[in-house]
Length: 453
Image (tube, rainbow, N blue to C red; front, side, top):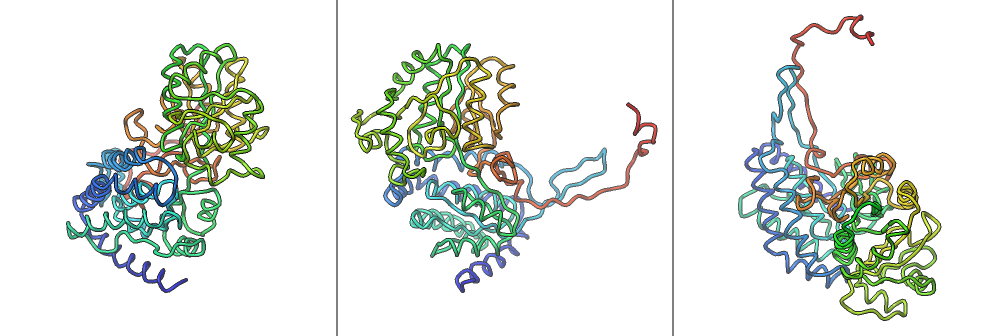
C-alpha cells in the first residue's frame, strides 16, 4: 500500500469517528449541500467531462448533474438513518442504525460526476466516509466534482476528509483501496466489478447493461414507444448502462415501428451490407471499440462509410439474430440499436431473454404493453432486476419522472450479473443495522400449530 493511500485511509477513519457523533439533521444537511454544489456547477462539470473523456453530450450531462442527486435527496429526505430508526412494538423489536465505515467508491469514465455525488450522498446519509477512485481518463472531472462538494461541506463546518479522492488513480491503487476499505461500491466495467468482489470486502457492483425493449403486438401507441426508445438510446450518446439497446417487435408491426422510429429521430439501416459496416465500425476482434463510445450517431455512421444527417439521434440496424449469434445483440455504448421481429409474443420474450443471457442479465428490460398478463409473464421469464413498463430504459436509475424506483448511481443486477443485490442501491445498503429484541408478549406457537396444514 502506498503512503498516499495510507494517509487517505487514516484521514477517513479519523473523519469516521467524528461522523459517528453526527446528528440526523447534520448528515441530512451535508447530503443536501453537496447535491446543491454539483447542481449549481452542472454546466461547468458537464463541459469538463466532455472535454476530458470525449464521451456523451453536454446537455444530457447537465440534466444528470441537476437531477440525479436531487432524486436521491428527495428519496432520503426525512428518512431516519441515525440511531433508532424503526420500532415494531407488537414484536418487541427496535432497529438501530450504525455506519458501515469507510466506503471505497470506484467511479467510471462514463459518469465521472454523478457517481461520486450519488455514492457520497448514500454514504454520508449513513454517517460513513468515502474515498473515490476515479477513472484515470476522467480524473480532472471527478476531482473538480469533489472539490465543489468539499467546499460546500466546509461552509457548514462539517467534519473534514469525509469525501476524499485517490489523486493518482491506477488499477493497483484501486485494488489496494478496495482491499483496505470496509465496503466497496464499484461502478464500471465487469473486470472492475469482479475485482471488487474479489477484494475480500463486502461489495456492491453494477452488472453489464443490455436493455431490451419488447413491443407487444397489441400495443397501439407505437409513436410513444418510439419516442421513449430513442430518448432512452440517445441520452448522453448512449453511455448509460440503462440505455435501450434492442427493439423487439411483431413482424406485422415492423414497418409501422420503423416509421415511428424515423419520425422520432432514428435512421433505419436494413440492408445487410450496411448493417455489416456498422458492426465492423463498432467491433474489432469481438470487442467494442473505444473510439465509438459516447459518440454521436452521425459520427459512427461516417466511420462505417455511411452518410446520415448530423441531427440523427440514433441508428437502428436490422438483425434477425439473437443472443451470441451477433455481436450487435449485446451492449453498445453508443446511440445504435438493433431491431428484431418475432412471430408471437412468447417468442419475443425468448429473443429478449437470449440477448440478456448473452450480455446484460440481471439489469433491465422494457415492455411496451397495456396487457397486465403479458407484462407479468415477461417479468417471470426475463432474468432482470427491473422490468419497466411504457417508459425509457434510462428510467431504471429512478428519479421519479417516469417511475417510483429509488434514484441511484448504482443498479444492482443480482446473481445474474454477479452482484450482491438485484435492486437499486440506496443509503440503507450502507447501514449496519442492530436489532434490540425484547421478550415475546405472546405465547410461542405449539407443535400442533407448527405442523398444521
